[in-house]
Image (cartoon, rainbow, N blue to C red; front, side, top):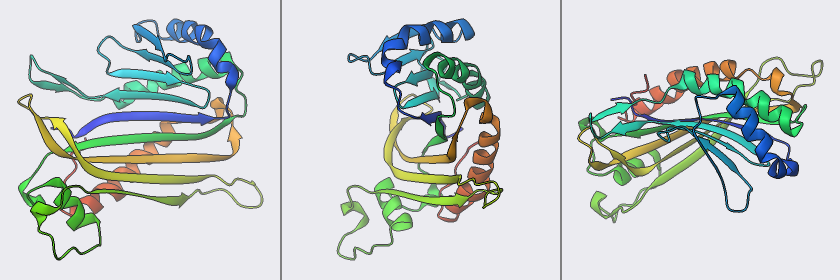
Length: 253
C-alpha cells in the first residue's frame, strides 16, 4: 500500500485584496483552461476564499488574498476496497495551467514569494516499530525526553514538529539572490482507512519542502517541475532513510 495520502502544492504571493472582488473572473478563467477538471465551485461565507473541486473531491484548488493551493487526496473506494492513489504529475500539470490564469486575472507580477510542496503520509503499524501505540513510538524515537515514571501505556499523546533550512546554490554578491529552502516535518498519531475499509490508528507524517524567493518572482520564472524534482529527491534521499533508521518504513512510490 502506498502511504502517500495527500499531495499539496502551495504558492504564497503578496497580499491582494482585490482578489475577493474578482472571484467570478478567476472561476471563468480556470474553467476555460481546465473545463473537464473542476465540476464544483464554492466560496466561503465571507467570500474570502474560492474553492474548486472535482466530482470526487480528490482534487481541490483554493485561492485567497495570500495563497493559491492545490491538493490531490488519496481516495479509498469502499466498493472495490482499493485506493485511488494521489497523482502527483496530474496535479503539477493542473498547477501549470491554472497559476498563470490566476496571476493574470488579479494582476500579479513579480509578486510570488514562495512555493511549497507537502507530502502527507499515513503509515500503518508494523512489527518493526516495536511498540504498542503510535504515541509511544513518537515519544521513544523522536522525543529525547525521558519519562521514567511512566510506562508506554500511560503516554497518551505525542507530536513532533521541527524545521531546517537548506542553502540555495548560485547566490552571493554578484547575483544578489537570497533564496533559501525550508523543510518542515510534523509527526503525530492520527487515523486512516485500512484495506478492509475500517478506520485504524496510524502514524501521520507531513513533509513540507518550501522554496523562498528573495527577491520575489513572476509566475513565469517559477518552475513547478524543478521544485518537485528537488523536493522528491530530498524526501527519498534524506527524509525516508532517517525514518527507516527509527524503524518507520515509508512506502512512497
